[in-house]
Length: 358
Image 1 (cartoon, helix red, strand yellow):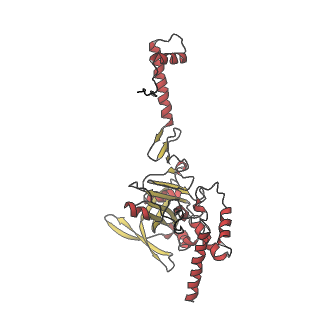
Image 2: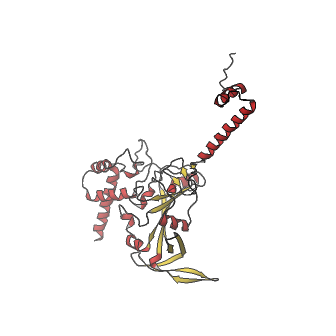
Image 3: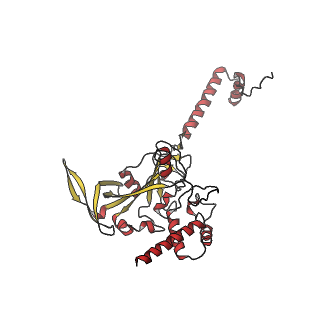
């Protein structure tokens, strides 16, 4: 039988090592002790070089330490330097207020919208920096499939010290609203010695905290474990009263406090199960359903209601306005002419029902 060739690299012998380091040495007649010293110096320099880099590969991110600053090293999601993680944990209510009001270290602010996130992590974004037309556009994150969504709004009285950028929060403010949802008054419980007493809230210092919680439907069904996304932002009460009930119908809106936080939770590390798109026909290649941005959907609804041209012309015109080579996701463009047709059909039904009520 023919002997198999050994491809294992052979180690250099001591003599070749001596020759290599003797060449690097200043003296041509280096002794054995000098060789050991040269070897030690080379190993030490290699260790110092590695320590300066301070790069540690983790499960899904890369940590890069900066020796020049005292701030903690940024942690990048899967090595993407445009997506530094703020934290792996869900933020507390005080963190939400602090970050959304004052921001955080620049190295921990995302330079792009978080997309295709699969693991636990919290990101901080600035609405203008990532050209986010509407706060709800963060829902379109290229995650395939539908979500069960639930919004919650809570109110707190906030005392702000702008000099040292500190906050003092009250307990939750219980509010009274009018028929249109605007806040008229509120009160919160304050601890006085051993008892809690109700205190009227100063409405000029009251802020609303929005949490948009979404649980992936099919993953919950198939795996029995939740993959959750929570988008968080704040509004002063006067801003809340102005946009309450109108925010979901706006094609664009810039917050007075433009910092937002988005937290992903996948504790069981389950795979994400995609849903087929509802427009997919039997026998054809099934495309995944991925929601479009809120601002795009509102614009499409308005176009479908007012523009009488064929849907393919409206869809083509919308796509031509976008540089397809620069966008990071197609969630910002019209899916196909069928999307316009669907909006037009729904709008016609809405008009029909409105006329029947009259």
